[in-house]
Every structure is written in structure tokens, then in C-alpha cells.
Length: 303
Image (cartoon, rainbow, N blue to C red; front, side, top):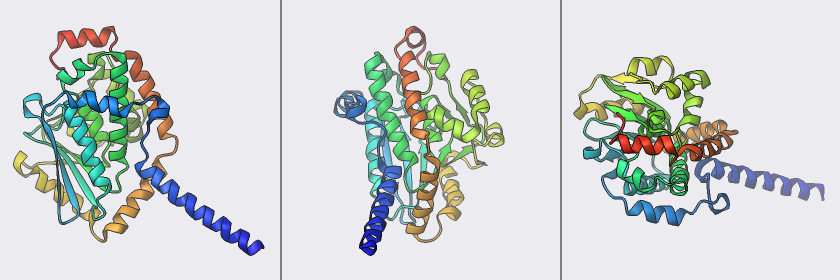
């Protein structure tokens, strides 16, 4: 009888460990129990078109995810937000994958949310739903069992700065910058960027960067631990140099690389969800508020 009990206990532990591993990797932060109406927010985002998010999987196990909306400085439209979620869903199923490079076309990384999209969902309810959708999406990006790097050419501002924090590493080309400009738009980060920034640089540095809306060039980003290297390549060869940079970390069997990343994910997740959900609550207090609406009426986009 004790032998059977031990077997049952070991089986239960095995099941729980597997469930925990799945939780760490793929579970979304929000569902209907949190008041999140995914089908409704997707319907509204689908009406706000422009740009594209392209995915190219390499035979070497390294994928390239391209943000492209050149006329809007690679700002994310509603349909681009949906495409980003779809591409991440594809990457979650890619068993041969080992690495990921996220980049922007036309020598610009990403300038956050497209102004037309932002104005169309400027009321508090829609803003909160968009916030929850993007937190789900970027958290799934962060939890991918792939070693990821954001290749930052030109500007990564606002939501673009938040996007780059969802990658494991950040490489910056000469003359590029990261900037959390949210305060100038009368809001705070809402895609999980503040919580991730604190994990990367600590609370004191994060407070300086957020409250000062500081421009962060490559040298400064490296000195505070926000960036991992500077690339000297021209725009047309930066992707190739990023491929060379990530290759040493993705050598070997895919299952070993993916298992290594899973260890990091699960070790990092403790209490993170509490912090990022609180970020959503704080974001909801300013989205669509007087300062936000005034900023939207006065500026086409803060650069």
C-alpha cells in the first residue's frame, strides 16, 4: 500500500511540474474572469488597419519578426497588434525554433501605438481592453522558449520602448534611442513595459527614465543594463550583424536551447503577474483622462 501511495505521489508531482511549465510559457494574463473580452477587442482592432507584421523562420532556427508601417514610423495599428499576436502564436508552435530577432523596417524600430488607432479607442473601457490584449501579447513574446533580441535602429519610443523590453536582449545601432515618452501623452506605460523595465534596470533607474521621459542612447542604455551591445552596421546589414550576435547563444540542439530558456522564464516569473496587473490598473486611471485627451488633441505624435 505505501508503494502505491508513493507512485501516486510521484505521478502527481510529475503532472504538476508539467502543468507549471506550461503555465510559465503560454498562459495569458487575462481572460473573461478578469473582465477581458478578447473577441470584442479583436473586432475593434480589426477595423483599424495599416502596416504589417511579418515573420520569417530561418533554417538555422532563428526567426525574424519585422514591424513595418513606414508612413507612421512603424507605429502599431489595430491590425498590426492582431498580426503581432498571430505571429507569436505561430512561434509558440515552432518546435525547431531557437532564436528570434525583432526589428523595424526603414531604419526605425517602433513608435508605439498608431495615433489613428489610439484616438479610435481613447475611451477608458476600450483603452483598458487594448491594454490587456497587448499585455497578453507581449508577455507571451517574453515567455517564448526562444532566445530573443530586439534590434533597435532609429527610435524605439512609447509602446515601441515597451516592445523592446519584452525581448531577452537589446542591440542598438549607432544614433538609435529608446525613450518612454508616455508622460508627454498624459498616460503611463500599459503594455507591461514599466514592470519589465524595473526588472532590467532597477526601480531607481526606471523612475528616472519614466518620469523624465529621457532619451536613452546606446552608451547610456548599455551602462544601465538596458542594452547589450551597439552595432555599427548600416541599416541594410544590421540584421545580418544581429544574426551573428545571437548565433553563439543558439548553437546546438533546439530542445536544449529551448529548455534553457524555459528555466529562465520560470525563475523570473515569481510575483511578476501581480506587478504587471497592477500596472494595468494604474494605466486605466489615466487613459482617456484630461491630460491624455489634451495631448492627443495638441500633438500628431510625440517624438
